[in-house]
Image (cartoon, helix red, strand yellow):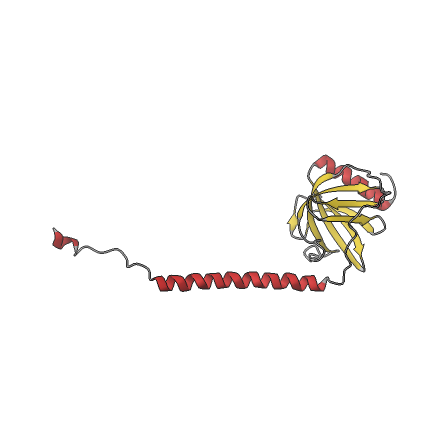
Length: 183
């Protein structure tokens, strides 16, 4: 019986530890290079937009809220007309959950942490709806896109208002603010 056991086929040899370690290190190096490349590209874009001044972040004391503060998703900001060319300075390109409201003389966007953005009426040039911005795509007409100027740059900022009824109210009020007429 013991002589028959040694004649049967054996299992595959154990993998060599050295080749496993080399393979693991190669995968880690490739992932590290990819992360380094993405960081370098992001910093290169930040350098491209470094001439932009910091946007206003505080609501003027005499400003009156026209709408409630609506729960929204800040999709980010891009160069106007180039929906994939994300602005990478002053946290304008970072998507986040925010609350947004239309005031008598501008639009205020704020998150729970340290991001706040005040878009004065004088800087707002257009309000429209669209399918998406900065790689964030929603249903047709599902995103409010605010076009405004910062320094010499025209910027599109995308907001996805959470509730449909809030979306309509925010859009109507923002258009009235920019166009200067009641709809």
